[in-house]
Length: 189
Image (tube, rainbow, N blue to C red):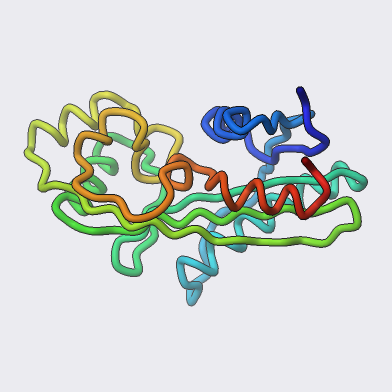
């Protein structure tokens, strides 16, 4: 059954996660915004700004509706891992993450029908095994990473995770606890 909100994302993973908890958006609308980080912006500020700007963009198109937007980034140290545009770029990403603990930050923003925005940030720490050259090549060749920042944990990469401290759904792209709380707060049940 559809709920009375709009999902500001074309991500099939986010839609599937929401459906998993019975929150099927009545409409899906992509937010086409500039996702360039600002020079002095910290990763947590950046991901919250992206979720907010995506929600605002779609809220302007549908001013009377509740809008949910989300953004997910991988952070290694203070470096934001952006979407790779080539196999070479993704190989560098995999080498960077190999054997390290990194963070996955996902911000969720809900704008209610009165234009009030609420944002929550979910942080998950992930410890990845030291990857062999073959594991890196196989993962890059799988192309699972295409269209996302860093990787998709719900695929082959899941076998490389030694430890995770946080929200699995947040790493996939939408922390369900935070999303449900924000939607409930905006009157969506």
